[in-house]
Image (tube, rainbow, N blue to C red):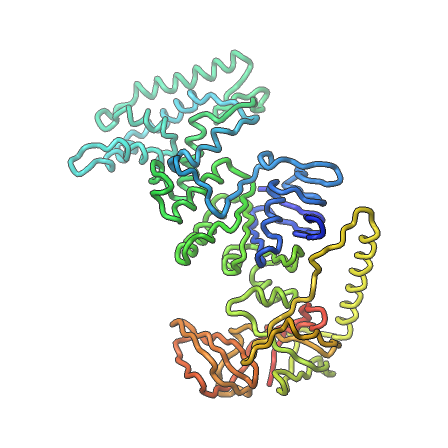
Amino acid sequence: MPEIKLEHITKRWGKFYAVEDLNLTIADNAFVTLLGPSGCGKTTTLRMIAGLETPTSGRITIGDKVVFDSDMGINVPANKRKVGFLFQNYALWPNMTVYQNISFGLSNIKESMAKYDFDAKNAARLAQILKNPADVTSVLEECRDKDGKLEEKKAILKLIDTFTLSQYTAKTLFGYHLENNPDCAARIAELEAKAEAARKEAQSKGLTLDREFRLCKDGEPVTEVRKLTKEEIDLSVRRVSRIVKIGMFMDRYPAELSGGQQQRVAIARTLAPEPSVLFMDEPLSNLDAKLRLEMRYELQRLHVETGSTFVYVTHDQMEAMTLATQICLINNGVLQQYQGPLDVYHHPANLFVADFVGTPSINFVEAKGLQQGDGSLSLTVLGDKKATFRPAKALNLADWFAQRDREADQKAAELKEKAAQKGYVEKGNKDEVFRYHIAKVNEEDDSLQDIPELTNEDFVLGIRPEFLDIQAQGKLQGEIYGAMPTGMESTIKVRVGEFLLTGVIFGSSLFTIGSQVPLTVDGDQIMLFDRKSGKCITSGSLEF
């Protein structure tokens, strides 16, 4: 499967930038989720790769083929990019059976393909099967009803699945009635003679038949522009039906299927043409919670079995975390972070990423302080509480701030240079530093507050709920403000002065609202953010 590469991809309408200067490489056989809030540009990105949306500028490569280049005037149409697209609403035809829905697209394919001698291929395959007639009769015996009568429809479906046949070849095999006469010597000889005659006929034309019964000239397959045969279409339909486990529903109509079954049909239809890349735009959003969980497992299995590259759009972080090998987190058309799920969770690039990923949400705590001689930071948090932050790795804050300022100056210079270029359009939807939320007992409207004058002494701590714990030795005193037990764990709100902290306590403990509890902040994955830029500086431990 191919690598996908996006270089400086931008999509704008007027001054609105849906996607801005996106650089992204999707590795072969990756499962990448495009994650972000509604309107962030993830679906637009997906549609541009698929060829359903034209970028304003940039370059897109799928494998070794450039499918879009604004400078060179290249824009390969969607139907030539060898990709599959799974939509949110399934888009099944209600007047067609499951089989017809899956096969419809295949019947319209017309492109250069290898020439086969299908009659000879099927003859050889049947001869091979008949050499072990006991295998066939065993299958047929499983298809008798309670009265001992052989059920033809059930038997044909069983033959299809057991021997990987098309329905047409399976019907031929059933028609031999081996349950009555398993002696196949004469029929095998007839079938092998037919296959051999086809080989001799090909040789008379200066051609050969390879093991797959493709017509070859000088060792290379002969190609022709043609449509798929009924045999090829049926084999493709049966192949994908086995993958998504819907073989028993072929004669049903969409209205006769559950939501999950309809989704499987839509997936099968998308997989049938064997796309090199499968794009999915929030395909599980219409399903209930239980079915969504089941379909996540199915998508994981499907990714492994097909070996395809999956690109998946969602605003549901749980889907992104559980399905993806890489998460591409976008906000306001700008790439925020592109890493593995656990890296995004434990090592977020900035305040926005830390806030968006994680359920329950991360605790943000404003802090003010200075770095000490031993590398630790002496901080004031939660109003007047004194705390010490110890970086997990050696940190020189002065150097970090200097690098931050250099990067800001470089970005400003690049923007100035870009603005001077002909045709430049200033971005209307400006990028701003993420305004994080501080949970308090008495909430205030953050939008009405002026942004304070910030210095290099201003920080934000990010504390995941699982790192807040109730322990007897805890030096931070709090009051239970709310508790939601689920059996395996409890999500609690703890009041510390005017601030509210969220914690996840594992186990089946019960908590009484209003009770006083000692708190600890455990682990060395407490995050330290620069309040001025919003960037994550490092992670470490916090002591009160």
